[in-house]
Length: 44
Image (cartoon, rainbow, N blue to C red):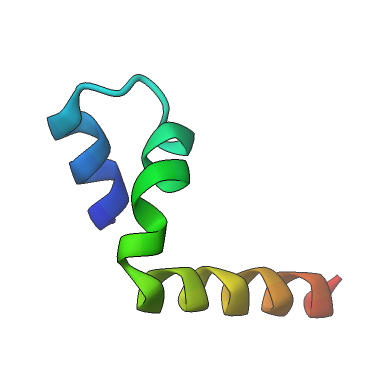
């Protein structure tokens, strides 16, 4: 996952920090994560 890679390269201990600051720069990734979350909720 690209966010894992970016997070490690920037030296963050937690991917949440990367998501908070950089996810807005990757809008297609945010849309995919939203879709994944909805799919997960629908499968419950």
